[in-house]
Length: 359
Image (cartoon, rainbow, N blue to C red; front, side, top):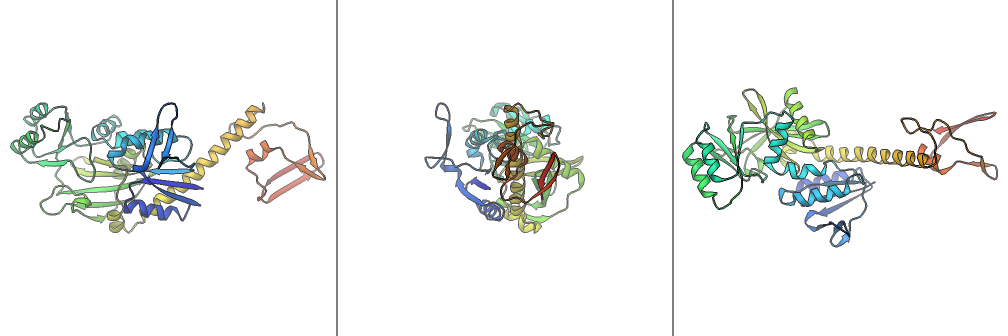
């Protein structure tokens, strides 16, 4: 099987690439900045000016700056290979406003949040809420674009400084947790690693990239359920979910489609990169098997052969085709049964009846 990881080439991506090489026959490392998506008459995906190779698995990841390219590319590849995240995940997951709306629609608990399209409307919100508060911009990762205001005066000053930016502002309830949060890695429908992050002194953001430190933790069932539900809501097979422990239970505060692995690997001693690689490998195998089954079913349908619910033919009428003393099976049958010349077969024969199956 042939796979590709498309990313910015971070250490985490390189770790994942190395682990993928333990499972796949061939793995290519591609730079998202060299991807070109053509839309229209000559649509297609190109890498360094050449058509993108065919892959059985594509793991695409990158920052919010490449969200549109990631969505366009994965939308074109949908159904042609296994990908852990659906195309919609890249535009929703990389935008805090769209993420907030999706979480709300799915009944996932989050801190009270207000969206203001202008600085003037944001100031009106600031006059009515309780402090402290968190102020965010719609896009950004690793704690960038996230600010803390402990009073109306400081929040209003921030708004004045943002006047030239001219973009919506997110104002969110501050949940006191002692400057800690929990980073959870979800792969498929399982939590594979979790760590509690604590901000360095004088900092409210607990992100490792801004100086926070992490320690491995065991999540309770409620937190695990919320993390997995969040990943499914975002259509992400691989992602990080950041939680705060609020007075009524866990709150989701962030989703990260391209999480860093250094901090959580060190804190939990879990080889997260290997977990990702194995997940990609197993699901690619399933994808290819399902594709073969669908193809075989289509072949029998074209031949006018009745098939059961699982694509297994109920009855086939054909003539015997011999080569010397050897009986040749129709290619449609070998494709449906996934029999190749390398397989060992068990043959049972009696008068008027022949049964063949894999050993």
